[in-house]
Image (cartoon, rainbow, N blue to C red; front, top):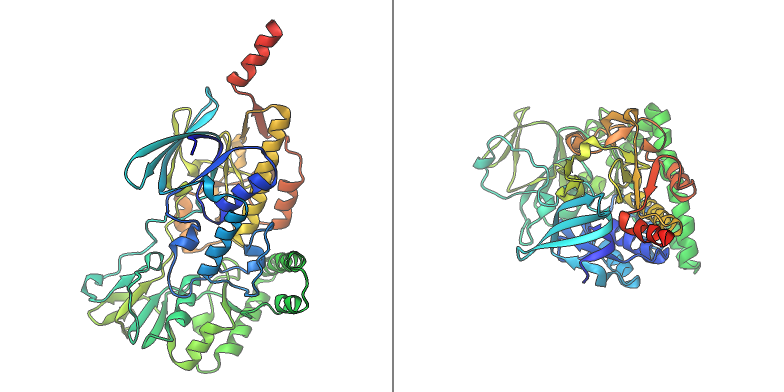
Length: 498
C-alpha cells in the first residue's frame, strides 16, 4: 500500500467506510487509504460486544443513504450492523484500501509543502509515516481504550466482577447470578432484557431517570412494503424520508412544548409498566431531548420489569460491600456481578495530536465550519454525527460535501482549502453543549470544539438545514480560502517566463 495518498481517512467504522464509498461513488478521482487501529471493519460495532447490543436509532436513517438497509427491524443488533458496514465496503472495493492495526498518534500539516504527515504505530510496535493531501477524521468522539467508570467507594471489598460494557469479557457467565446494572442510558436499558432470561435477577440502579419510549421491533410499514414486493430502493427512500421527518418533528415539538411532550412520553410508559411499578423511576428532572431519548423495541424492558425478572431502583450509591451495594437510603442490593454502564470518555480524533506548521492544535480552541471543517486547519475534514438524530445522516452529508469541495478544487486548480473564522465566530460553549446536557457531553467540554456564534459556524443539528448548506449552497462563500501549493504554481510561472 502506498505511503502517500490524496485522501487519508482515520477510522474504518460507519463514518470511515461511508466516506471512502462516497469518494468512489462521486468520482472524485482521488486516491485514498484508511488507517484503522482495530483488526476489523466496524468501529463501535466491532468494539462493543455486550449482550443485546443494538442501534439506538432506526435503521432507515442509521443506514447509508446510498445503500438500502433491507431488514425490517427498527433497531438492528450489533452483528447485523457490522455485517452491513462490511458488505458496503466490499460492494465499493474499500477493503483493499484499509491498513488495519495502525493507531495514529500525530498528524502534522506543512503549509510550505502543502501536505499532511501522519505518524502511526503498528500492532507490532513499528512506527510508520504516511503523507496525504487531505486528512479526514472518522473516529467518532469517544476513547476506545477506556469507558467512563467512576471509582465507587468500597469497590475493593466486592469480590465479584465489575464490568464496563465497552470491554465485555467473552467468558463472563451470568447464568443464575444476581446482576446489578448501574446506569440509565441506552446501554443499561439494552442490557436488562438481554440478561434477565439467564440471570437469577437483574436490577437497574440509576441515580436519575431517563426518558424511554417504546417502538415496534419490526417496522410495520417496512413489513407491508416487503410483502407487497415494493423494490427495496424505493421502500428505503420513502421510509428514510418519513423517519427523518418524524425525528425532526419530535425534536422540535419537544423544544416548543416540553411539558406536553413530557406528559405524552410518561403516559405511554405508565400504560406499559402497569400499576405495580412506581413512575418516579421513569420521570426525569429534565425536559425531553435535553438528553437523547432511549428506545426499547416492543417494550422489552417494561415486560421484564412486569415479570419480576428485573427491577429498577432510583438511589445513590453509598458503597460497595462484600455482598453487593449499599445505597444512600440504607437499602442493600445483593449482587454477584456489577455492570458499570456509566458512559463514555469523550476524546476527539482518537487521541491524535494535531500540529499545524509546527504548532500543536487543541481541538477545544477550534470552531467547526458547517459542522465539518476545523476552523484554521487546512485540508482537513472532521465527521461529527448528529446528537438528536441518527449519526449517519450527518456523516453522509459531510462526505458528500467533502466530495463537492474536492471536485471544485480540481476543476479550479486549487490545492489547499481552509475555513477562516473571525474573532467573534467562536462562543465559550461546546459544539454539543447547546443541544444536550448528558454527563458525557459535560465531561467532554474539555476537548470538544466550540460552538459557533453565527452562520456556517453555528452547529444546529438540523438535517434539513445541513442538507441545503452541504449539498446545494455555493462552495466559495468568502469563508473558505483556497490556494495553490508552491510546487503546483511554479511550473505555471516558469512556462509564462519562457
